[in-house]
Amino acid sequence: MEDTGKISHLVIVGGGTAGWMSAAFFSKVYAPHQMRITLVESAEIGTVGVGEATIPPITFFNQVVGVDERRMLSSTQGTYKLGIEFVGWGDPGDAYIHPFGNYGPPMEGVSFHAYWLRARKLGYKAELSEFSLSCVAAKAGKFDWRVEDPRDPRAAMAHAYHFDASLYAKLLREVAESRGVRRLERTIRGVNLDPLDGTVASLTLDDGETLEGDFFIDCSGFRGLVIGDALGVGYDDWSEFLPANRAVAVPSARFQDPIPYTRATADKAGWRWRIPLQHRTGNGYVYVSDYISDDEAAGTLLAKLEAEHPDNKVLADPRFLRFTTGRRKQSRFKNCAAIGLSSGFLEPLESTSIHLIQHGLIKLAGSFPRAKNDPAVATLYNQIMGEEMEQIRDFLIYHYHANRRVGEPLWDRMRHMAIPDSLKLKMELFRTRGATIFPNQTIFQEPNWLAIMIGQGGEPESYDPLADLMDERAVAERLQHVRIACRQAADRMPTHASVLERAAAPDPNKGKVDAPQAV
Image 1 (cartoon, rainbow, N blue to C red):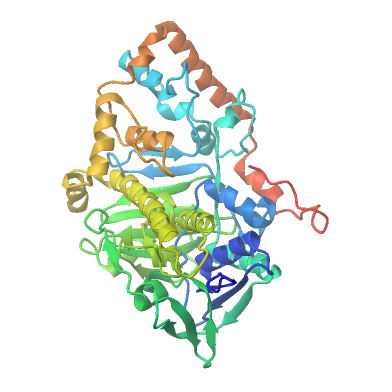
Image 2: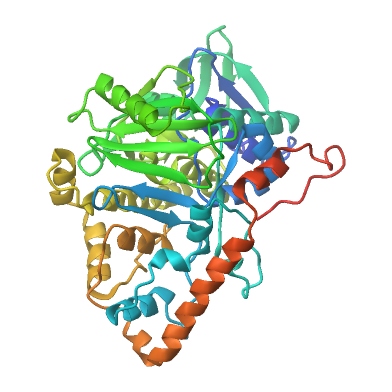
């Protein structure tokens, strides 16, 4: 007997980055004869466009959907990203880089940083950043790709991108439509539920058309048109831990070669971002409205841009965004999955917005329903997405909680606030023995936690005792070898600007075969 509940028509509600990532991904996973895909978007509804920075898993996503790196960079005015620089998050004026990739290699099965901590106890002066090739290269304005040879320092690197999110969505639309995705430019006037089982049956469009579907992906933004308004799935508010609730964004002209990293600068009521693209720079201020007005926030952002350089010319009026940090109580309910802002929002401090879209799509494909109602895999999906968002939440909270900006009301509040038990455990493990391998680690793992904990002034009482088994002289020699290798490898790298010039040049392989993907 035929399974009448089989998913044969996937409907994506909303366009933008989330919608077109969904369309490009599922049009690659499923051939047109396996499943029809329709995307509905309205020209009346603008896109947020705040996040233009990514983290390394985006390279995998682009490979999966079939977008080669040269095409992506030229189509989106993209640049490379080796990490994020945090300015003023410890003491005012301090700066450190959270690099992508690893620090030095493990020695005798023990994490590299345990030996560095041991050497520091004995008076060793070299900073942890000197053992990360991504850090050294970023500071020098250099770039190169990761290689597979473990003897090459570049094997420890990873990279991501900065790009214009609206241009990225446009590129993915081209990809999706070339594979048969149907786009409807309509406004949705209603969501109709099946009276028998409460699943989503159809959408009512502004021209009176009824669009039926078997499974719906809600990419409608903060509103959550399907998951929230129609299905009534609630929202967990995390403002007690992450109180920022506003952002103002403004683009400025390019006046220097783009740096290969994002910058996040702490300020009175939050933090300011800088994202370098080929044709312009993205700037913004994420802030807590209790401590600054919208007008003052915009004024601060514009004044800082003017003070930094006379050629830092603003290209448009400031745009404001309001949000509530948190997540849907369920990202997947009945025959609907929320992707992007409809599933929750975590401020873009560590560039995780696009990652959460990607992660949600990959996990959705891996647990795709066999019928409209598939509660077991929905439960699994919700657990996976909940753990991912909670891990990112803890990572973001640490930046605020570990600040040393004494005497500023917001920062004093964040330093003394109650934090989740899951973060307390991480901090205690680091404080007592320098450990940065924690339970249930997802996207942020040992080197990521190490970067921010050391970067913001953390000083563990001890380190992995197995690091004491190696001779002190041998430890010093190995540390010095890694440090010199990183510096020499960075010296040999091309400049970021020269790499971008080649990436933006006409592709000699266009019309033949795709240029090789750099990973």
